[in-house]
Image (cartoon, rainbow, N blue to C red; front, top):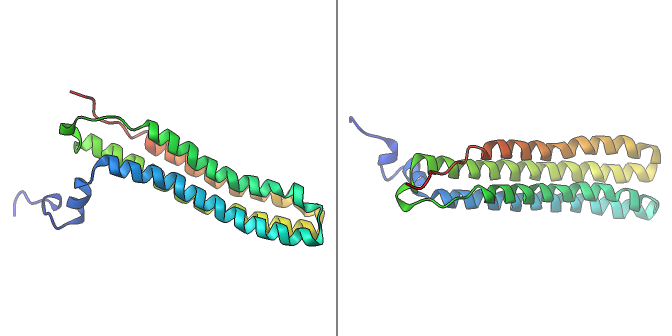
Length: 181
């Protein structure tokens, strides 16, 4: 079977993926970046907030200083919004004749991959910061000298989201659309 390619067979996934508009992939990537990041932030706030409220019953003094954990969780959502804005600026108009050109497909896949990476990195970061924030609130209620020590660990957990943002920005640098000819 000379000249046979998987993308040429209409019953393969490769054929289906090549026929989806690069703009669709880009839009899904942008939506995942912001949507899953906000989900991670909300989940982290839920975990931290419930422990903070529960521990504040025993030690009301912890309420204000442990709000930093909620702020760290909220930063995860902000990372997603920032990357979504950056990815949105990467979209460019392409003539219909070049919509499925390899350069267009590469740009669409790059924006899609950036959104997936950022979204899921921030989901895991939100969970990490939420769990550590919960532990911070509970341990601070028992022993106030542990607050700063656990806060340092929480900062390292928050860095996971920044790593995802950096990788997403590097991946989106591959998104160059064909010029109008």
